[in-house]
Amino acid sequence: MNLKSLILQALLVSDFGPRITIKIVERLREDILNGKLKSGSEIKDALKKSVLDLLTSKGSNTELRLGFRKPAVIMIVGVNGGGKTTSLGKLAYRLKNEGAKILMAAGDTFRAAASDQLEIWAERTGCEIVVAEKENAKASSVLSQAVKRGKEQGFDVVLCDTSGRLHTNYSLMEELIACKKAVEKVVRGAPNEILLVLDGNTGLNMLPQAREFNEVVGITGFILTKLDGSARGGCVVSVVDELGIPVKFVGVGEGVEDLQPFDAEAFVNAIFS
Ligand SMILES: Nc1nc2c(ncn2[C@@H]2O[C@H](COP(=O)(O)OP(=O)(O)O)[C@@H](O)[C@H]2O)c(=O)[nH]1
Ligand SMILES: [Mg+2]
Image (spheres, rainbow, N blue to C red):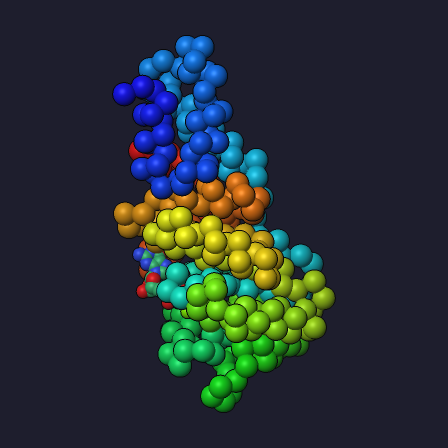
């Protein structure tokens, strides 16, 4: 097998997807042809470097942008089951430990059990929470109410859960637009962040998901979840490369401490380990 097909195989196995694989191979092509890259380990290092370059050149700003107006508002969006509510809980824990006063907003009014799940996280992390007062409440009004309370009572950050359906679901997208407008009405410049949760197991379907959510509401960062399992989440490299949006956090389990700031170097090492 020649070098080029070796590299192709390595990248495809890592779940990178064809487009980005070809891009990386093209980048290494010259060095392979003129004999600069010879041994397996040289190639591996060059591969790592080129993936790391893609990740850091396009999406290097992994800090949360919380701005100066209080409260900062963070919306968590994504398809069902990806880990929105869990990530919100873990993010609350992290920000609270950094000294922020956190209010949660149970904006998933689509599933009955969703606010119960968030209430458990509120208890677990010692944060306050706003839930819908009546059944069939609009998500946007729950978020609006939460941000108002956040503003009146001096909260630093309002973390907004939202409901997930497929990214192709028209009414979900309408709802997210309404949510965004509702919080903007209360605090200018809000939401500060709209974080899209991507399940590390999703593979190539990540790309259409990310495109769609980004087109509709404008994504400011990704949370890549479930990296504690067998998934390595390589496909997120294509997403970062295409959309130029950074991964801000990774989820590595279901516990309160299992959300870590994205570390591009560690991520790339794990992909090629
Ligand atoms: N192992 C693991 N499980 C996770 C992670 N994030 C979420 N989950 C689990 O994935 C399932 C769906 O999560 P949930 O937060 O309810 O997803 P949502 O529908 O997007 O709100 C739950 O069983 C979570 O415990 C993670 O980083 N690692
Ligand atoms: Mg949820």
